[in-house]
Amino acid sequence: DIQMTQSPSTLSAFVGDRVTITCRASQSISTLLAWYQQKPGKAPKLLIYKASSLQSGVPSRFSGSGSGTEFTLTISSLQPDDFATYYCQQYNAYSGAFGQGTKVEI
Amino acid sequence: QVQLVQSGAEVTKPGASVKVSCTASGYTLADYYMHWVRQAPGQRLEWMGWINPNNGATHYAQTFQGRVTMTRDTSISTAYMELRGLRSDDTAVYYCARGALIGSYFFDYWGQGTLVTVSS
Image 1 (cartoon, each protein chain N blue to C red):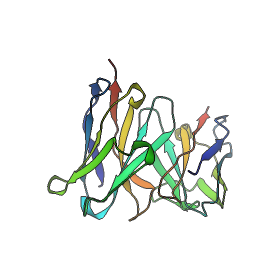
Image 2 (image 1 turned 135 degrees about the horizontal axis):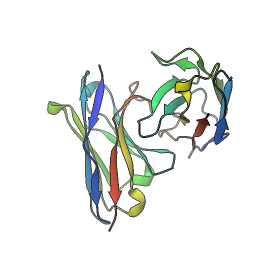
Image 3 (image 1 turned 90 degrees about the vertical axis):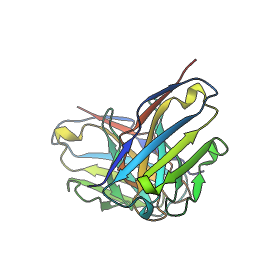
Image 4 (image 1 turned 135 degrees about the vertical axis):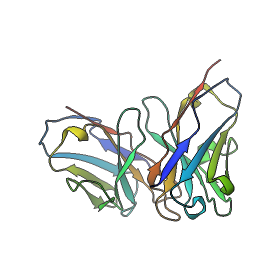
């Protein structure tokens, strides 16, 4: 099974900061990677798919990059609404393994 | 607008079964795979499997093989997930999630989640 590892697990930042989260796959997944945002008590929300494609309606301050085994999610200027937990997910194999999450705190 | 509305919270005992429903609106259920994902308290999201509502075909994660059954009733635009032989570590929020593209395993719409608590 493909394992997904995110870093850091927790990130403290200020409004306006540029924030980068890393996700590593245990084997190559090409660009078959998605990113989600989850707020407490809510379902995840799709932000990015195919490593760098922005989901409709998602602000352009979110961007994704990478291929193979290393990927990043960048928030160019952190807004108050962005404090949440972010998960990466691979969808290369016939499964959809998620990373352990990165909590972005004020 | 697309919406997935799930059934309410359940409290059940070890060894029992639970069946969670997910009713779709704003699109045709048969046109997209429906996946189920769970999240135990403080844990990462865990993909459980999918059903193709068009023909009823299913594919389950190996972790749940033999314990889970996914079904659908297209006449009422509803998908179901039944988990049997419940254990305390099955306590989790269970989500239905629409596959964004046919055959894909990433999800563009999610239900609100159903908390299943397994306790004696």
